[in-house]
Length: 84
Image (cartoon, rainbow, N blue to C red; front, side):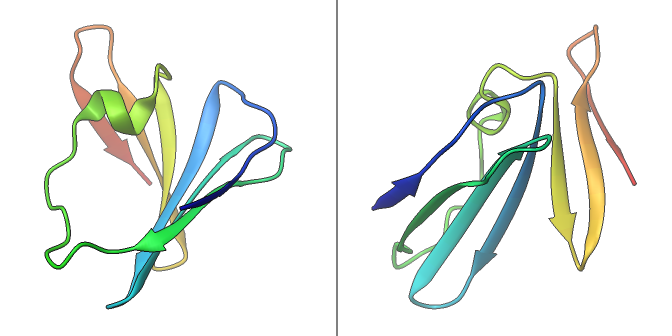
């Protein structure tokens, strides 16, 4: 698996795209270059994710979907809120 990274910040941007052979996960901080992971998908793509893995210690991430940006946040009560 290949990995490129620079910088970290309080808000990350996550992009997950997949075809039958490869997946690409980009996580960027405000004003920095993306962290890019490229590898082969397992025969059956993962459908369940632990929020601790997605957030990596952050309280908020951005998700790109159909060219729109959504914000996924963890509240003080530990609940998730998705906003556009």
